[in-house]
Image 1 (cartoon, rainbow, N blue to C red):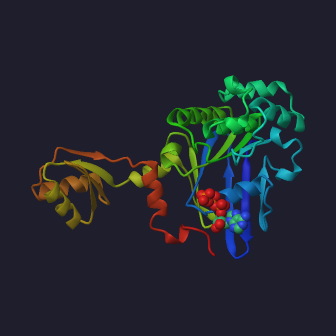
Image 2: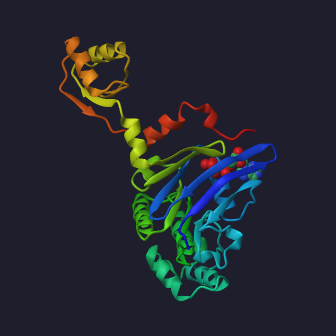
Image 3: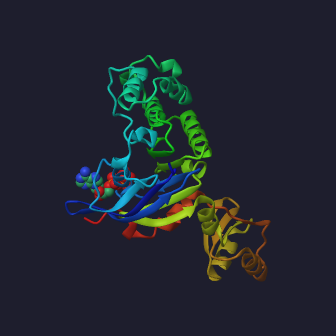
Length: 305
Ligand SMILES: Nc1ncnc2c1ncn2[C@@H]1O[C@H](COP(=O)(O)OP(=O)(O)OP(=O)(O)O)[C@@H](O)[C@H]1O
């Protein structure tokens, strides 16, 4: 089976609310694709439609070329973490996974493998009802991995994880993609995705705003941004603003200058006799690049009501 998710022209309304308005993108194997956008942009609805939990009004969503409902033994094709709270609190972690394996015709031997992979071996015989949110997330991931699927969909997997758990999750997602799986991860934490995702699908108001490599997005947003070190911050800022740049202070002797290439920044400062000690290319964070993309576009926020 091909390790891909293809979403094409999905439309979905909830009464007067347009949740999906022509959502289209492809998740490719061997990389982590971040799925991001403001609250209400349609991320969860898209994931639910991919997994056959919601029916779309139009368009289609395919896993390895087939709709979810046409998959036999779906856990072998796609693993999902949508709601880590959805488990029987009285069951032990191991029994929960054994029940799931049995119901899907998967070998019971997989249960101990996935418990080890998510670091829950020592808690395997404890009742899941007493698990912390982080442990529930790990158990949810274990369930998603039970069928060794080539495609994974994870909704906010770092939610509720402590810093150690976040580092662990990042490593796990990287290694799952390294094994050639297609990994789609929704998140609100851009800082997290910066260290994890190779690719980003940015959505707003039920459709795709940008479908881009993380490195390309950061490079594009960093273009014409320089960091300037100067003891004469006020004089530098006014000279550069007169030349058309936007200037922001980032430290007692540092400015970030946007809108002018570094050679122009140097020329403007020299022409005004403003001293400086350093002009360097500025690399924006993924969060800043994302805000550049979505921040000024009110139309991308929320769904039409
Ligand atoms: N079952 C439902 N009934 C009514 N409206 C719904 C339902 N599910 C989603 N919506 C609406 O559809 C739109 C898209 O919601 P969705 O949960 O897919 O967005 P999201 O991008 O996942 O948001 P968040 O980041 O807050 O999780 C929102 O306006 C939401 O209120």
